[in-house]
Length: 513
Image 1 (cartoon, helix red, strand yellow):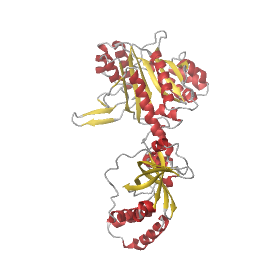
Image 2: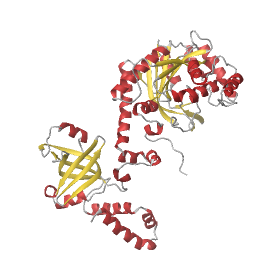
Image 3: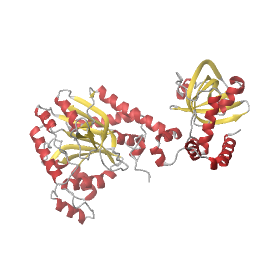
Image 4: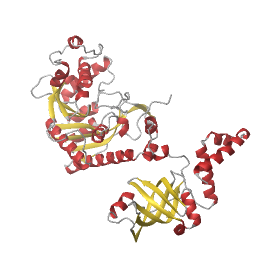
């Protein structure tokens, strides 16, 4: 009986019995799709035949890609019985009839074909194997053959069911195209789309390359608290939770900056952390409230040293993964000041328009509408993010920000009113933010006071007061350069994706309906 015939028969039985369903189990069964009922019926038959549909292990399978690499010289029609392999993966396709069948098994590394023959496996084993459902997980042991058409295959000597799939695979492995379903149920996306599997393998390689580059340069990887009594290190609203044992609110961190700089005070000199940050903000193509951030801090460096290192790091990572896209990571990247960048796109000289109302009026005269209730600093940030950032395709550093935008950056050594800060952009998004770090505790205290005034005026993203951080600075922090690099956005750039949800395995999603 074919799968289609089995579904048709089971459907007729279900329809005829539907009106008699009375128990909760029967009602639940009627609500399942017919395909799921077929699979559960097959599960029962497998168990009745003494086959364990969920065994405990299947030791030492060899990745499909590794087998293919080992046997590139095997000619069509040839076979190699000198070694047996075990392969394990999901059943993706089935072809053939009579005494032989071809099965496609997919694992993380790719696909390999299995040749099943009735005369080798025996009647019962062969029929059970070819009767499995697409999506079932199966292990096969056998030797390598290459078909006359040139397809490398495993000639099955033995096999084992590793997990019975009780739901049909998406789109019969022809690709899962429902974007929302892909994001909500990433497991289905990974099953159906080889490109998605490769994307997240590439993401893992990017993270490994970043760590390797830092480790080889003497940086120490550390871990700092995710739950914090005071959040800080960025302009953002936090997620709030309640610590029952202490009976007080704590916050999911919005950045690792302040703790890492305390380690610089402690003498570690070169530290980095690669982990999750959380910001209670909206969703967009470049924002996910939970995201992966790399921050590193280096004693005796400044923001120009950090810029050179960022160029080197990204170029290294791009080479490690074989990047061949349109972005040019060869050094040097373009460098421009914030003042110049905004003037190029809008004609506005923001440093000559230091008064909020004057900047609003000048923008309006050029047809640029800004939020009338925003502070001067917020207006400048809006001009940068909405009128400059989307046009920065090739890697570009924007240097030298107003002090009002940067409460942790050191005053510019030659430009009053500015700080030594850069952001780095590519592909129309910002992916890195760096400072020559402020290490004067009295100036930092004054910056906190200014932030407190901003909070009192209604800016709920302003930096809260952190006395412990001030106490640490008072012990003396050496001149330091520091940077935050958005790993999700870096992955977007190096894989050619335009939405952050594509590169996060389980992105935040709005509720259904």
